[in-house]
Each structure stands twice: as C-alpha cells, then as structure tokens.
Length: 411
Image (cartoon, rainbow, N blue to C red; front, side, top):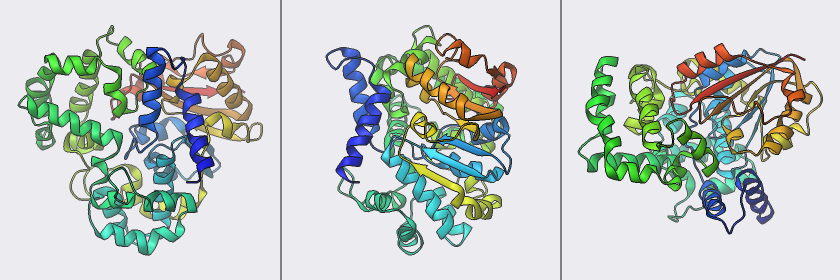
C-alpha cells in the first residue's frame, strides 16, 4: 500500500476511535487500540448473516451498504440476490481479505478448492490455488498486501497454509483464552463433541463457568486492553461492562453461556470457531452461507456486484444520491462514535434512504444507543422495530453482542 494510503488509514482510524487527548489514560488506551487494530483483526466476521438477511429483506432491486470486516457476510448477502453491495472499511487488512474472497469466488473453478481455501485454510495447495486462479484478479494494493510480509517475515498469503483462523487479533485472543483455560485444567475443545444441548449445558456448567471465578481470569478481564483481541475499543468496553454492573467477567460469562448452550453445535459455526478454533471438519458441518456448497454458484455469479472501498460509512454515503439505498449494515461501529459523529452518519443515512429502507446494527450493551444521542428530527423519520430486534438478538448465533437492532425508514 502506498504511504499516502497508509497515512489515510491511520487518520480514519484515529478519527473513529480517539475521543480523548493523548496525555490522558483514556487517550493512551485509545491509541493502543488504534495500533492493534491496524492489522488483521477478524479472519471471520462475528455477526450472524442469517439474522441480517432475515432483517434486511433484500430483493433483486436492493442497493445496500455494509462494513466489510472479514468479508464473510458481504459474500453471504449475495445469496439473497441484491442488485449491488457497497462494502467499506477503515482497516486495510479487512479490505484485502474481502477483495481476496471476491476474487477467489470469481476465479477458483470448483467448490472443493474454494472450500479448502477458506473453510480449511491450512493447506499448501491453497497457495498454488492463489497463484493460478486468484492473484491476477486482485487489485494492485490487495495483491501487494497478500504478497507482502507480516511481522514474522512470512508472506501473508501463507496464512492460508498455516490455518488462517489461528491468526489475526481474534485468532490470537481465542488461542490465549484456550491457553488460560487449559492452565486451569479445562480444554474448551471438548464441547464440540457434545451431541445435544443438554450435553453442551453440562460441559459449560462444570468446565467453563467456574473459570470466571478464577482470580487470574477476573483480573485479566478487568483490563480494557485484554479485549482488544475481540476488536473492542475502550469506549465499547464501558458499554459492555455496564451490562454486568461493571463486572466484565460476569458479562463475558453470560455471553459465553449463550454461545455454548443457546444453539446446537451442529448448527453454530461461531461456536466451532470459538471452541474448536476452526470450522467443523468437512463441508457438511455448519458454515457461513457463502461457504455452503448450495450457494457456491450464486456467489460466483454475483461477486461482480460488490464494490469495496477504503472509506467510512459516512464518507461513502456522502457520495451517494438522495433516496438511492435500500439497506445498511453498520455492525457495531456506532459504539465507537461520539454524538456528533452519530448525528452526521444518520443524517446521511436518512438522506440516502428509500422509503422502507432498513438499517441493522449491533451494540455491546442491550439497548439501542441512538435515543437521546441523534437529533430527534432525524430519528422521528425512523421506526424502531423493538419486538423484531429482540427476536434477532435471541437468534444471533455469535452471541457476542447485547443487542441486534432494526430501524425502518418511514420516508
């Protein structure tokens, strides 16, 4: 990536995260997060695309805007046959990963090779697949990223021969959590062998829940920097901790309980990633929609409908025409924003929204963060679907967020 592009990445991240001066403790933590977030954070995105698709109600006429993150959901949304998807992100690694997935969807000739590349992501054959079918389809910056070297001096594309899902901040965080659990005599991987919800519940109650009473676990989780591996900046840490009355260990225990016990292991690829450190062996296990064999040709045929840009959501919307968008996915980005940033964002969403347009976002805490923070005149034009939002929150298999929220534009 050219120096000017790297500088712009830093500027955009700083604008999104830095809310306090560098000389304060809060400002120091924000800058440490910015430093950590510059690289690959999410090898796999942690928002449930099936919940998103249910809430968005995409049609062949839909134009949608989403944050790219790891790219999994961008490709999964293609299964609903929208007219156009615009994916934006401030993280160059996430942009490169999204573009890699799109290029592979268009270039890799067989489902088996595509699944091996992103489903297993741990074979040398993937490097040959990249060289034969993917590299020439990448833009110059993404190709430079994947063929450049990481902090271990290995080419980044080699991640797909070294188990991608063990890497990135999230992969390292999960690995550290497994190490800490084993230190206390528990192997989280054992839960993937549970055959029923009752067996999952038993394992959680006997093996996982007691870990959160351990002094080391409580000390680590009380530190804001400990959750950088989940992509949680200091401002979002406060919102998350508030759900447990300031007790972060209690909040994480409750979220892990839902992940471990809320859904059958056979249906929840998020649980497999957290406890098994990868997808279930073979393409017959639970997978995100874009990796399922039944959707391979749909994703392959529609990948050209996606545009990927290095911008914030607000910056992208400033380039869009009035009334031109039907759907928006904001992930949890609003948890990072100040009131003025939220109002600027929603002013652009409102300007560009078609009547009936839908906005889906997630929050670390349970309630929507918009009331009282975004201009009342703007929010008066939107209907908050409270009951539907509660249902989506309950059905989100990633279990990491306190709330999944749906707003519908009244016009």
